[in-house]
Length: 135
Image (cartoon, rainbow, N blue to C red; front, side, top):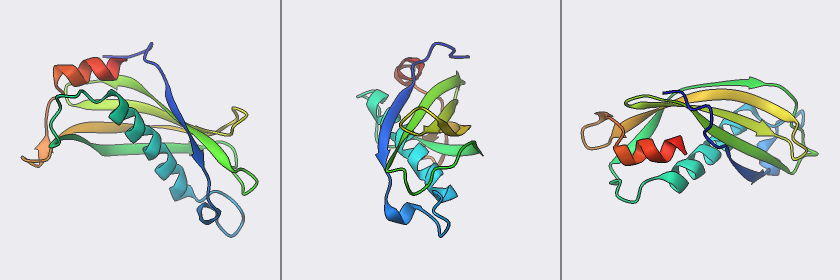
């Protein structure tokens, strides 16, 4: 199911001195960490109360395009995500990293798969999850 009207979720992330490489650029791995922080914060915010701890999700795929530099003069960025497509057991999420002025630094998407930690395999989303992810 495509989710064209699903709301965006965003957080402001502080950047640390250690997040930058020797050239003063935000390290490429840090982009992924910041976007993960936004996804996890969003998923925790919408997670149905009756979902068991073993009913989780795993990252199955991630892609990221670097658009603009984030350099050591930046002290914060905005990490945002929005669900795009909801399947039986997978969720495609768009994500974006922005400067505070709205300039897009990176865009991409990821695929999250519903995970059964007891059975060590994928599972179908519950009805509560499906309703929560749609927004």
